[in-house]
Image (cartoon, rainbow, N blue to C red; front, top):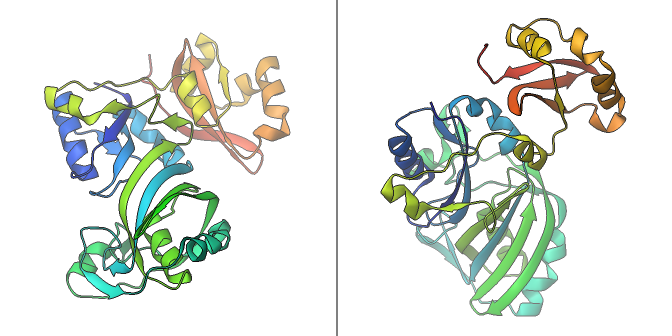
Length: 301
């Protein structure tokens, strides 16, 4: 059974589900899942987990992300992307008018997700409700834009780069920037270039390899854990056996090496990865300053 991490460079024109289907076929397993979808028109880094590594999904979905995108000013589509129908038009803003509003969308902001999205409302996808003619009520959410810059201006197109928190919709950002600049707009191109410490330039494989049935599965090693921003410790064989069988954590957490690490304030209220012989065996969670089992990854041996 393959268990680990797949860093896929998804091309535009296929859904994230399509990409997963090809990976499942290549690996011969259904235990595959992505950690943050990419729209069909978008391309770039799609982080996929398989096997027991699926237990780590939430640690990947919370990572911040970086994108480059292109806004088409003057028109807005119902889906906020090139696949939708035009629902509004307006005059084009000048570069100065567009760039002037960028500071409003930097830092912590409140964003309304697109109606055509995978968000569930009363058990149904918002996109399914929208396609059936209903108007889903999209709850606004707080997100963080760490960096927003204009890379090029070729009316009606503006290329931007965005570094944002998890949960940010770049389609909504494009819409809101255009409206703030006195125009309308939709996102016509999008590339996800980075997720946390994982970069499309240095880490991903090309989706073309899927057609040959070749998929690279990387183990969840200390390098991956570091890119997740988590601390880690090594345990002995006896300690690993205790963890496999769910015994109390007090024994090995009181050891000299572990206690020094856990006493550092910077590691409080976080997760802690536990390794035995370079294999990730468990993730611990700090709840109210007490370490508890989060999930056990390895098989008992």
